[in-house]
Amino acid sequence: MLRWRRRTRPRPWWLLVALFGMAALGPSSGATGSATQGLTAVIYPAAKLSVPASVGMTAASGKFSSFQASLPISYRVRSTAMGGGNIAVQVTSDFSPTGGPSAGAGAGALMYSCASASLGTPCAGTQVAAPNSQTPVLAIPAGACTGGGGACSPLDPNSVTINFTLSDDPGYATGSYSAQLTFVISST
Amino acid sequence: MSRTVLTVVLTTLALASLAQAQFNPSGTTTLSVNVGSDAAIQINTSNTTMATSGGAFSSDYTGQTSFIYKIRTSYSGGTGSITLRVTSDFNAGGPSVATPPTAGDALTYSCTVNSPGTGCSGTLTALMSAATSVATFGSNAKSTKAGNTGSTSWTLTNDPLYSTGTYTATVTYTISAA
Image (cartoon, rainbow over all chains, first blue to last red; front, side, top):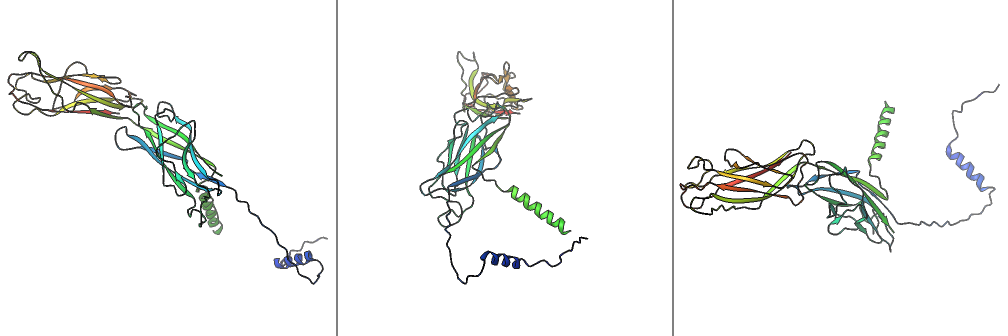
């Protein structure tokens, strides 16, 4: 009759490791040796960003002055010594429903400026966000890297702020409107 | 008990990791704006000079005040208005809105207001005791971005009882939208 017997004292783990190690060495030769192993790490340029899922614009003081909003962008980037990178934005879905503002209405319906970049150079002046093309947000220099100290930026992640301005045209019908913006980061 | 605590801790850690910013090669954000009713008015004629023409007392004093308005009323059920009120009467000795020297003397006006406004009908008498209509607006009334124009044409009775001199009154225009 077969009987199972419960093992109450398992073998120590280090004993098993030692046994396997001895088996791998084989018969003792009484000699020692050394070997070297080269390790090569190829670090590629990389870039990623994070933006809030939504941001609400609020009316500035004054009648029909403008709507404003600030959007912080966080990013991590590494560029090569001869490369660089950038962050760009595009209006991928215009304001809806119809009857309100439109980024494609011309005359700079949705404008923005860039500020407070902790790594790189923010866009200059006032930009017009467009539905049919990417427009600049940030220029990333060669040899840039997020965090890590030394030659890298001490901050992790890095950040830049976009300040949006939307003209308050009396021709907009009252209501709530929303648009979708896509930010893209790249580095070489 | 300890299992419950462990579960809570693990759940908290899981939620915290989800709450952290997600980094990707691209990201999207939804930009939203709530456009409400609003209105503004600019009086272009800061000083309206009223003058008379023709023979002695044959015509009243007349003048015109022009303005630009911007308005946006609610899409549904919205209303708006432009009104005026004499907030400072003519100085003593001359014409008066509140206490004219002769019954029937009055400061009256008519309105010309471009769409989407509807100008006041006929001739109205300006008052100190109440605001009177210049224009009205209906639902979803929207001016141009630069604003639309309007004017009030004034008439002041030319009463011989007025002492000679220069008299000034202040009229305040108010625009509103809902």
